[in-house]
Image (cartoon, rainbow, N blue to C red):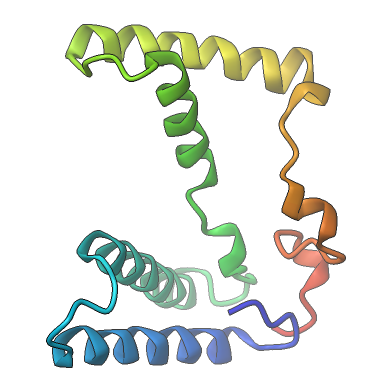
Length: 140
């Protein structure tokens, strides 16, 4: 779905086609094509993108919408750090509260005091174009 020359309408149509194709494959197959959780996650992501497109066209018709910025990266980063802090402990309410406090401290250090310590993905080094940057997108 990363076509920097595609308009928002083209991107939403592509997402809709993928969602419907995935639904057809999921319902017609006797054997599971993909795991249930992955199917749910993909369909939720597709629905979120479509709803954001509709809401943006209604409430902010004059402003651009970049679907690539509609991600859950900060939340996923928090969950990853939570797993690091909890270290496979039992996830009860007290340990989760303590872990969230520690995650907040880690985020503060990594974002404010030492941004150079942020982990860079290996894939990011190979990508020639930063798709999360709106300046890279040429279409509307």
